Structure formats: C-alpha cells, structure tokens
Image (tube, rainbow, N blue to C red; front, top):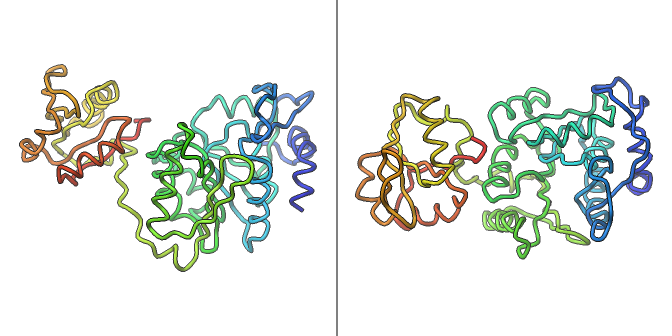
Length: 336
C-alpha cells in the first residue's frame, strides 16, 4: 500500500484538489497544475512555494515511517506539529480516520487552502502548538487520544521539548511519536532537535533512528518501559495565567523579550510584581528597574518568589542558574 501511495502521490494531491474527497471543509479554486517536491530532492530544484506541494522529509525516510504507521493496529487519529506546505498532511491523512495539523503561521495554511478542498478527515489548527487554547482544541477534536504524533514544528530546544512534554501524554499505548530533523547536530537550525533526542536517550527512551537520505527521524513507540519513564519537570510558561498569584518575579533577560514580558505582565497580571532584571553580562538600569548581574543574584533571591527566564538563550541560562543553585525558575515561551 505504501509504495503505491508514494508512487501515486501526485494523484493523491490532485484528488485533494477536487470534489472527489467528499464534503469540503474549505472550498476555493482548484489548482491547474501541481508539482511534488521532496526535501531530499530539493537541492538545486526550482519550485513554486505558493503552488507546489513541498514535503520537507526525504522520500525514503518518510516511506519508512509510513510503513511503520501502516503496521500499527490502531490508526484512528494522528497529529503533526508544523504543516508548512501540506504535503505530509496529505500523505498522513490517507492512513488515519482523522489527521490533525497544528501550524503557527496562518499564511502557510491559507496558501494551501486557497488551492485545495479537504474533507472531514482533515483538522487544521492555527496557533502555537503548546498554547493552552491550541491544546484545548486538540483535546476537543481528538478526545485527548492520539495513535501517532509527528513533531516537526518549532525546532528550537525549548520548542521541541515543550511539544514533547505536551503531546506525549496524549499518545495511546503502542502508539508512535516521531521527531523530524533529529540526527544532524552539525546543522545550526536543527541541532537543538538532535540535542533533545540525546536527552531522551539519557532518560532511557528506546529510540529508533531512521536516517537514510535527509535529516533523520527519531521514532519512539509507547510501550511498557516508555510509559513509565518520569518526564522532566515542565518549566515552560505558555500563558501568563500560569504564573502564581501575587508572585514577586525577576526577569532573566533585559532585552526586547524581557521588556515585552514586563509590559504584558503589567497589563494582564496586575497582581504580579516584577522587582528587577537579571543579565548574564551586565548590570545597571532598564527603565525604572535595576539590572542585576547573575553573579550577584543569590543576594536578591530572598526578595522574589521565582525567576522568569525571558531570553532566547534559555538553555544556557538554565545551566547558569543550576551552577548558582537556583531551581525556582520558569521559562517564558517566545510567543507570549
């Protein structure tokens, strides 16, 4: 079945562009022509990102994953984070009763939907993958139970880790979770994914790595051993509502993100007091707040309840806080 699905993918795409798929969820114009572009064939290829169906995975790696899915006993509901050009969604949905794609960038979905008709098997959710509203919607359309998960959205360490912590508990026993771009530590934009997969190995997750013709896909089957592994504490704040009431905070990171978070807290959480900023390299003043160098932070810990990390370098900051013996901290996700 899988070989036939791959070989006839252009037909699959064209069928998705027609009325043959059943009741349309979205109905606009039909593409005049479609080109299928695989990630493994992308180098040196000219393609139209507004029209072509682009699959980021390598064809042989992706085929291997599809065969694993085909062999699963239960294939009711699957989910991916990261929709991009929709090629993976079109293939995955052929194997499930319902397939859900979560995408942060509305433009990616809109460009796709302007040229496609999708039926009830497709659920498309726009929003940050770990935002409370997104997770609520996922639980609503899936009853909080998934047979398959593909993490291929935010490739930062914080992004892939928070996705894993959010979605792994929804995976049914004997289900499969796949993490794309998991075996290329030398590639800057995806090296964090590799590092997180290594962390999962240290937690004794059994991981099969499919690395044939592109950037690799880590495969984890939820079994008796994996389901009992204690997950690391989720340090990520995805909503200001999650901050403790009447908390006294310092913000670690006095750059644009930190300043924006201070403003948002002042508007949305008037019960919370931001007492000062912390920085790894400097001290001084930011607005009417003092900036404390991290080497002096322990002198001020009695004045606060928690450190809120507001920096894109949160992983390095976690290490620094650990060296100073500070465990009362949370990390603000960048979409806040």
